Image (cartoon, rainbow, N blue to C red; front, side, top):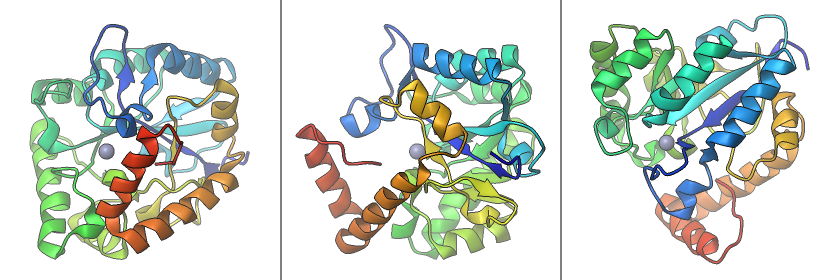
Length: 264
Ligand SMILES: [Zn+2]
């Protein structure tokens, strides 16, 4: 794959043996990769000569094999698991933090967040309360985009310039407000590799999930097989439009509890 086309991977919490996860419902757990799988993915990236980058690094589209690695929500495993493994591998990453989750059980505390930032990792914003942005009016959007940015900058002492949308819910207003607020990019959960032609305020991102086999992970990093996921994106977007976010979530919960595999 050309160095001018870079996949942004999306992770959440990492499951550690004997440690309860932040949430237990199926819709959450299917996004949680085990520590063993995570280590195997990292090991493959290293042995195959890939570089793990933060979002600002990836947006410079450097030459060579590389993926952007992102984590949503601000779980404690960002610091417990990912940070030491990435330091040893000389990888960078962007951690998108939900400010309202800081200090809750299983999530980073403000001190831990500061440590993560002090280690040199890029800290991004994943809203104040994890609300679906497409459901909000302008006042609500400001509360989710501007206030948490300032708070994260206070905590870390660093500029916070990259945002990811809770639940992947994105619309044009989010892009406009993010730009006005001083962000330099907005990540969605749509399945495509980014290139220098991609609007940085609507970046694609590919979820690494609990059931993603290593062979599929390797294909994702190369930007392979994303079109099948794009078809699923389109189906999901249509369902969300027809049913609204609340109706869509209710249906998704129902399907998951019956053991089907609706996506995202
Ligand atoms: Zn999230």
